[in-house]
Length: 339
Ligand SMILES: NC(=O)c1ccc[n+]([C@@H]2O[C@H](COP(=O)([O-])OP(=O)(O)OC[C@H]3O[C@@H](n4cnc5c(N)ncnc54)[C@H](O)[C@@H]3O)[C@@H](O)[C@H]2O)c1
Image (tube, rainbow, N blue to C red; front, side, top):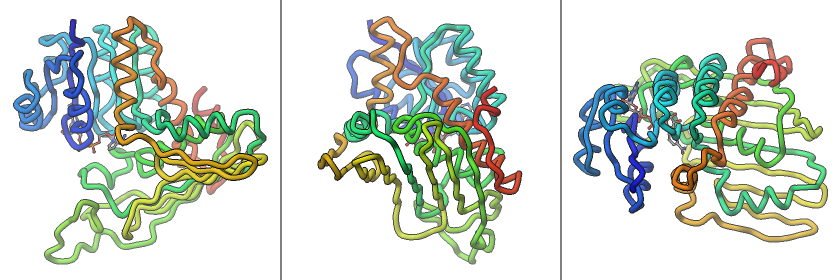
């Protein structure tokens, strides 16, 4: 029997998950919930199934086996808890929340319900990055240097607000903080600084936003961030982030290990040293993270590759970074946030 799938939040990124789900013949897309009902209706029209303004109605009427949650960072909590209470498995986009308290609450609900809950850290599935992980195993790690440069402010209205989007560290750079854990192990401490280097709110008359915005009437997040991370292995890491407008996305790592220098650009990697090579991720690499959940449920298991706890641990690093900023740049122990 086909896996019954529902969707909560049918905005920007949901399109990827809708298309990837529609491409499988072992799923049935039964319903869509969005607080902007027209968005849910548009999805229902395109993919079949019913539209709802309230996720609870979707859960109770359609009784899906699994829901794909693509809501903004601030809109987590009850959506996951109510799914867990009904035994509905879920996929949730990163970040899992903007606060540790809420993330821990949902974790408890997931564990008590015994459901499968996968977090959308898609980089963990890239063929290239899996190869890098294998190459790094057993080597002494030295530096884990990451950067996340965006060509401006993304279009969703919640992005420029700390309490809604979480800031770039929580919202976007979480991909790299999670990947750093995946490749180099757990982070012990984080020290951070943030700054805002340009005037975003002086919106020029007649300004027409492009795909990425250069201005926003209200803007309360830092536009540049720098972190120093101490890994439990003893390796040091850095992360530089910017949303200051410039021409391009540039997201990646340099990892220095004993005998190896690895360069990661998005989902692709190359390396040199005592081994040399490169791997490009497959064109459809970003669908694996959702398919892993579907395949796990169909196989009768709840053991997914990126369980909810991974989202909680990666969130703790972002929030430790902002906590350090609040403490004037003093190192913050990640374990204190997880306790
Ligand atoms: N993995 C990736 O590559 C990737 C890429 C883009 C976005 N994302 C993540 O996906 C999430 C959503 O981002 P987006 O760009 O799609 O945002 P968006 O604002 O375009 O879409 C979010 C949708 O959720 C709806 N929504 C808000 N609260 C809701 C609620 N309580 N119930 C039902 N629907 C609700 C909104 O109306 C909107 O349609 C973010 O956490 C973002 O970080 C991940």
